[in-house]
Image (cartoon, rainbow, N blue to C red; front, side):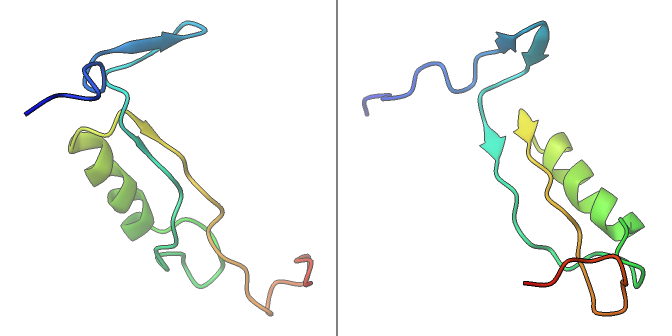
Length: 75
Protein backbone atom coordinates (compact mmCIF):
# COMPACT_ATOMS: atom_id res chain seq x y z
CA UNK A 1 0.00 0.00 0.00
CA UNK A 2 1.37 3.41 -0.96
CA UNK A 3 1.83 5.95 1.85
CA UNK A 4 0.49 9.28 0.54
CA UNK A 5 1.41 11.08 3.77
CA UNK A 6 4.92 9.95 4.73
CA UNK A 7 5.53 12.79 7.23
CA UNK A 8 2.27 12.67 9.21
CA UNK A 9 3.92 10.95 12.19
CA UNK A 10 7.13 12.98 12.00
CA UNK A 11 7.86 15.89 14.38
CA UNK A 12 7.19 19.42 13.17
CA UNK A 13 8.66 22.63 14.62
CA UNK A 14 6.84 25.93 14.10
CA UNK A 15 8.30 29.11 15.62
CA UNK A 16 10.12 27.22 18.34
CA UNK A 17 7.24 24.90 19.28
CA UNK A 18 7.80 21.26 18.36
CA UNK A 19 4.85 18.94 17.81
CA UNK A 20 5.57 15.22 18.19
CA UNK A 21 3.58 14.55 15.01
CA UNK A 22 1.34 16.36 12.52
CA UNK A 23 -1.95 14.92 13.73
CA UNK A 24 -4.32 17.76 14.71
CA UNK A 25 -7.74 17.50 16.32
CA UNK A 26 -10.14 20.29 15.41
CA UNK A 27 -12.50 21.70 18.04
CA UNK A 28 -15.78 19.89 18.50
CA UNK A 29 -18.62 20.06 20.96
CA UNK A 30 -18.47 17.81 23.98
CA UNK A 31 -21.13 19.20 26.37
CA UNK A 32 -18.78 18.75 29.32
CA UNK A 33 -19.00 22.32 30.62
CA UNK A 34 -19.97 22.90 34.22
CA UNK A 35 -23.27 24.54 35.17
CA UNK A 36 -21.49 27.90 35.24
CA UNK A 37 -20.22 27.51 31.66
CA UNK A 38 -16.62 26.95 32.72
CA UNK A 39 -14.30 24.02 32.07
CA UNK A 40 -15.17 20.98 34.13
CA UNK A 41 -12.85 18.18 35.25
CA UNK A 42 -14.58 15.94 32.71
CA UNK A 43 -13.78 18.43 29.92
CA UNK A 44 -10.11 18.57 30.91
CA UNK A 45 -9.93 14.76 31.00
CA UNK A 46 -11.52 14.64 27.51
CA UNK A 47 -8.64 16.64 26.01
CA UNK A 48 -6.02 14.96 28.19
CA UNK A 49 -7.00 11.53 26.83
CA UNK A 50 -6.64 12.75 23.26
CA UNK A 51 -3.20 14.19 24.00
CA UNK A 52 -2.07 10.96 25.67
CA UNK A 53 -3.49 9.01 22.73
CA UNK A 54 -1.01 10.66 20.39
CA UNK A 55 -2.66 13.77 18.97
CA UNK A 56 0.11 16.25 18.21
CA UNK A 57 -2.00 19.43 18.32
CA UNK A 58 -5.36 20.03 19.98
CA UNK A 59 -7.50 23.04 19.09
CA UNK A 60 -9.74 23.86 22.05
CA UNK A 61 -13.00 25.73 21.59
CA UNK A 62 -15.22 27.71 23.89
CA UNK A 63 -17.09 25.71 26.49
CA UNK A 64 -20.72 26.80 26.53
CA UNK A 65 -23.06 29.70 27.06
CA UNK A 66 -26.43 29.62 28.70
CA UNK A 67 -29.19 32.18 29.07
CA UNK A 68 -28.25 32.43 32.75
CA UNK A 69 -25.01 34.17 31.80
CA UNK A 70 -25.83 37.91 31.72
CA UNK A 71 -22.66 38.95 29.88
CA UNK A 72 -23.22 36.61 26.94
CA UNK A 73 -24.01 38.04 23.51
CA UNK A 74 -26.99 36.34 21.91
CA UNK A 75 -27.50 36.46 18.16
